[in-house]
Image 1 (cartoon, rainbow, N blue to C red):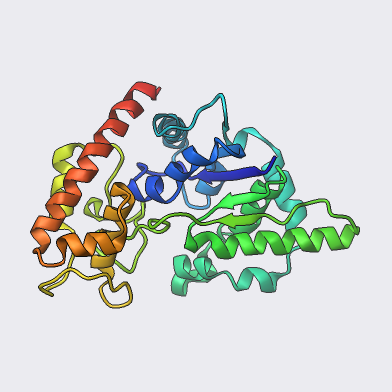
Image 2 (cartoon, rainbow, N blue to C red; image 1 turned 90 degrees about the vertical axis):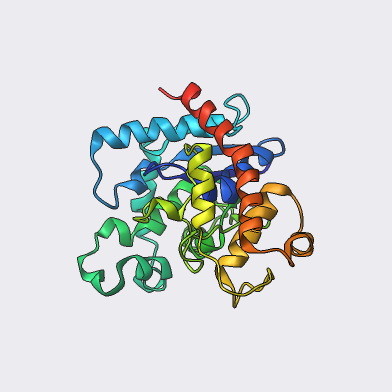
Length: 294
């Protein structure tokens, strides 16, 4: 049976982007794949963390997995640091990874900008640890967003280099699974940036722990544009396209149908409808996270 590995960092609250872009798909995939879902706390320490807060966040993310529908009877759920193979295999694979491959990783450049010389070795080697996560379980498929696809390609390159060096097909070359209209949910404040737990403004994201009032307010304040009609033009209208993508993911309707329904309406009407959709879903997750939490 094909095997899936994936994980989320335990830093900050899980948000709507985590759910729509990843966890909701995992719920469906666990019915047809052998699934391993990890809370990647080793990845989290590439930036400074307070140990007691990291432990609590790891528990909360685990609770969120279960609240969102990951079934512990069907899938394996565990914290990354509890299994030594992740760190150990990362070192071994690092010895088969040319620096040139890591230098091509765009996400490291985006995160460090002009301060790459001050970045930690852990942040630089993050993709090798990710490769160890996947290859350590000989996963055949990995659900990824567009922003992680380059890292998965690196994992495939590392697996191939390892196999060639030892002249055997030891590691399978994992395939990406990119699904649905919401593979990459963007910030509500800047449609060119991914929705993130680390962004300073809480108005940039819908947290799974937000109540109905907070969700309504965040969508009402979400950045849009001054054009009078609603159209799906992702290259020109980043924020509008993002809101349409969110609506499509929550409703199950196509982008074309959404544009047909709201194209001649103003943004306030569209945002109100979008907020109502999200309010229908998110508070139920919040309640279950509280119940499932420590």
